[in-house]
Image 1: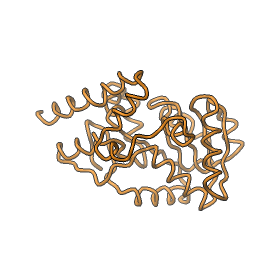
Image 2 (image 1 turned 180 degrees about the vertical axis):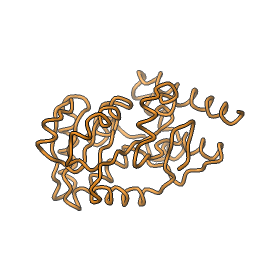
Image 3 (image 1 turned 60 degrees about the vertical axis):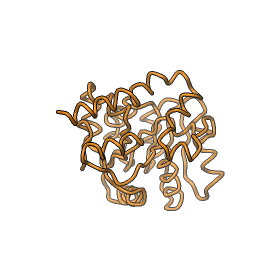
Image 4 (image 1 turned 45 degrees about the vertical axis):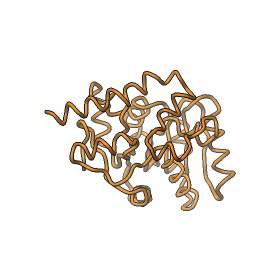
Length: 233
């Protein structure tokens, strides 16, 4: 598996990734999916607990145009960029088709519910449990979902999953989804496709949410510096 700044990332196509998720749900084990992007990889340089969780993931999706460039630059090219928010839609589609039970938790108040309502309105035969803002182990265990999607922001969501997944025997796939519920519910607009293709989605997000400037700095400035330093070393 390729590694970028000490964080393992799968070189995989979107179709292969969703097929792997389907297999994970059926194979009887418990699996964590992560979505490394430049900001996450920068955070993992100092947060060793976070890095260890990322490197234990059953599937690490390359989420970010910067990762694709870094992979080529470091001699570990990645097959395809797989945005986490887009992949959440793929997982929900798979779950509805295969009748896997989904549990959505986290995000701002009401966002998980709104996201679930949107999914149900677009797809058929969906078994979705809508959650409170903070995930509750007892409630999740009682509902016994197959797939758990947690939105608590990077780092916190992965640590929550790593700590509590053993207490949730029904959950076969758990994934931290960041702001995906906001996109699905329509509360935050995705960048136009042309900007995504050009790797400029970060600029769109910055225009809509200027408070993201520190996060953009880490992803767009600090990450390339770290990659260049790693190459020189």
